[in-house]
Amino acid sequence: MTYKENHVTTANYPDLLAGLTEIVDEICGSETAGKVALDATFDSELQIDSLTMVEIVVACEERFGVRIPDEALEQLKTVGDAVQFIANAGVAA
Amino acid sequence: MTGSPVAVTGLGAVTPLGPDVAALWDGLLSGRSGVRLLDDPAFADSPVRLAATCDIDGRLDRVEARVLDRVQQLALLAAREAWADAGTPDVDPERVAVVIGSGIGGAQTILGQYDVLREGGARRVSPHLIPMLMPNGPAATVGLALKARAGVHTPVSACASGAEALALALDLLRAGRADVVIAGGAESCVHPLPIAGFAQMRALSTRHDEPEAASRPYDKARDGFVLGEGAGILVLETEEHARARGARVHGRLAGAGIASDAHHVTAPDPSGNGAARSITLALRDAGLSATDVGSINAHATSTPLGDVAEAEAFRIALGDARPPVTATKSCTGHLLGAAGAVEALTAVLTVRESLVPAIRNLDDPDDAVDLDVVRMTPRAHAHDAALSTSFGFGGHDVSLVVTR
Image (cartoon, rainbow over all chains, first blue to last red; front, side):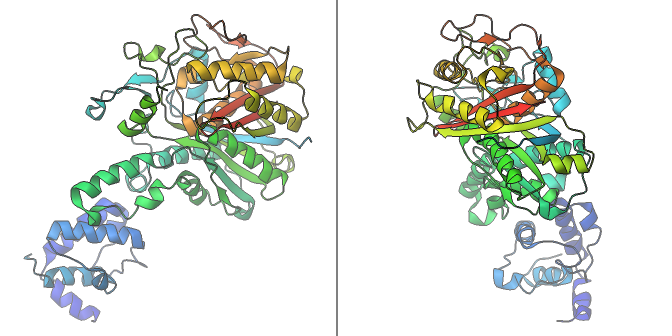
């Protein structure tokens, strides 16, 4: 999956991005939340460690009513990946 | 065998008497009590609703605090104060060690997350649960924050943990394994379950009508200890290292003695032999004799049995020497794994300031305790060495000697 494809897909879901940004703000603080962008990587750019990533996943599951299995989590490198996964899982924006 | 003393160059404390060392010392000298009635609904059915708690609201960044158990937060705040007090020394991280004891560890996290598990299932449990509950959490938190790479250690010996941490720190410095050690203890378990457990042991005071009078070591009317929370941290350095960097020295940790009762898991050995041996060993380690002890910061928890057993230990170890005795827990409550560190820190201040704080609530001294107790007002008393004793469930006996 390329960044470009991500971008095209997730642009349709601004509410998802806003929701995810709120989750990152709650868990990681405003400095990290300020760096949230579709192409931002969770590990190197947002500096979110693996434990915190689990917290974010659980928070997303609760907020958006989806299930993000561990196998899928491994594929979610960028914020855009996560937004797209949640969108594809059937969430109305 | 006598060992060399090490310098105490930094002090930090978060206690029920206030946010820092200055508040602790001021509270002890003015005889304030940190004990209060627990009015949170969670304690409504608790057989004991007394505790000495700390106010740390807003002192840590929200994001930083949410992945730290309260015991880790207390340790971190005290360590930051101690490190700043030491002048934020520029030391090779590979020569800095941490030794912070805790009796119980992240009790509030483990208990709170068990509620989450039962109510929401395993997937709701925090991924930070394990690093927040582990007893080495406070030491690990401080080691990370202050970049200590010479080893991070956690003695766990109930109410002797903080004192044992200082004894281990002394060993590390003497053995040349570090130049600087950030050492002490931290505890936070004011929660209905630990309180119920201590209450079932009949170890806690139930003086609900007078919370501030509940912790009364050596008083005839004492009826148990008051659970407290807090942290005490000391920055210790080899004399050479402290001198080389021109550090301000508060005093010295000159000796430590460790023994064990092998008598009963919780009851003190009434003979006082284990406790006495720890005192004798600490004095020998410091190269001092009984008559050199200028004051005692006693463990003195305010339990009917413990205070008497400890007094007997002083008689065995010190003979006719009768130095003035103070009991920090009369003001702070019993800080469990933090107690030994906070009290050793207080002993350092006692020697430095030539002032022995009075024991609060000691209205009617127990005849079974033949000690020169300091009561009513602090006693001006120039002296060069103080003894601090700590004992813990498990039969742990730890004595420390601090000098000018």
